[in-house]
Image 1 (cartoon, rainbow, N blue to C red):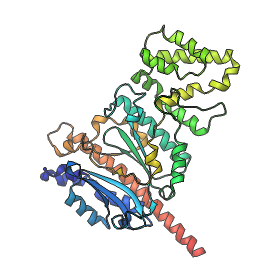
Image 2 (cartoon, rainbow, N blue to C red):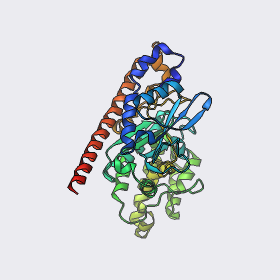
Image 3 (cartoon, helix red, strand yellow):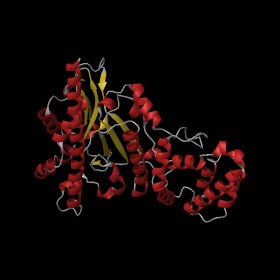
Image 4 (tube, rainbow, N blue to C red):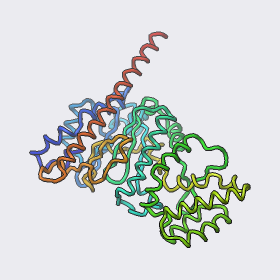
Length: 397
């Protein structure tokens, strides 16, 4: 949280605290615990020198604020809700609730992104996150009916999604695994050339919807990443084509062209369409080849273990990333495409009035807090309705 980084700049702490939503974070945690007491929620702190403290818990807002001020954590992670205080029964504790969470990291795109690798990230590869956010958010709302969905920038190279609906929080492990598997279309290890197989039957509506979202960004992404722009990348692309005769035609034509990936892609589409018209028997094998390739390049790559399990603690919204100093801001999914990495607030610019980015980062921080407050208010409203309906059902019985 902000306190750990602001420790040496006491005169500015009060100003930062005004836009650091401790009270809203408490409200969000309290709703996510219901119907269990807040003291049953596990928190963890990362202190200076990477000192890690697990199995913390709080009873009320005052204790939460005092704990933050006393420990000055560099990072706050949030875990599950147990049948007792995590500090008391950590060995035989039973998980009763946990937000349904998704972790998407750009390092999982390293086999396809070419602008950056590993910890590096830029506005070009951020477009992968935009696509992931749109696809997952739409699926969570339209396919599962979830409403209380929080999107958070991880602070460096990814995004986190928290689904706080009661039905999501109380999902068991098989239920979470089913959701994660439903959202995973890319399957296979590093040695597998083609990792998406859609078959020849009619595509599920969710896959068609995902492809339509990818299509909005595909031309820009293929130009940014130059998927087909070198000989080695072209060879990787050709290995995704299972039909030998088609692959030979594509290779022969694309090798003669300029190295523009977009132009090569358009030529591939033309050759593919002609091939299907002339070889009707190939339809069953490569009916959705174009969609499969687009999905392999651009579809979300989830860390499914984070979604399936209960033991993984996830960074709290508005934590500060220890390497970048960036704030884990809350953003609206429909605004992900407008986010610029250099406009994300950092603890340094928030504390430094002389920084040329101070005013913009302060405003962006306030917008992020407002986004968070809207989600918290929606969650509180949903919880109030759920409790009222439950009480009425109990009285009727």
